Image (cartoon, rainbow, N blue to C red; front, side, top):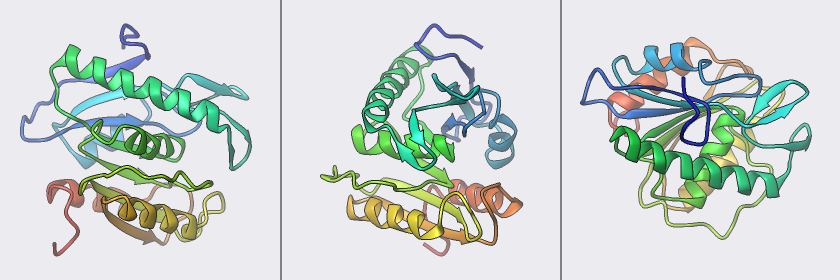
Length: 210
């Protein structure tokens, strides 16, 4: 663990050079270690770059501030997104890695898509688990066929599945190759999340049958 690139983070070099580096972005209350077991199951041998969010809300770490449940501080989101983008650039130079694929859960998934829109060349793709779209971020950049997998829970009380569907449509409008899956799940992750994410990565970000 180190904080010499602007974020407290973990970096684990890839054991399998054929696999991408995963940028792990934890949910509310997580840290730089939170998604490591998940990543190791989804992509064994992949490189890992895992920063800890800088915002603390009622003792829980997050990547950006909100004024209440579901209401984001958009100025803080913009600032924190820029900070994360700079961290990714510094980490790529320091560790000699290519563009990472983001693997984000909840709050981490939300800052992942914010980074995609702010800096379209920052990521090679993204797996967004339980992401939401609480505002209209237009105008949109050209995401140039960027592969994105969105996984949402049909019974998620925090993030209605239609909100995640709107996000998938918006990313498609921006040019991303968005794959959207609705699972029989709530806000927590289930085994099907892992299977779908692993298969998507193994196919190089292409849809099933694509």
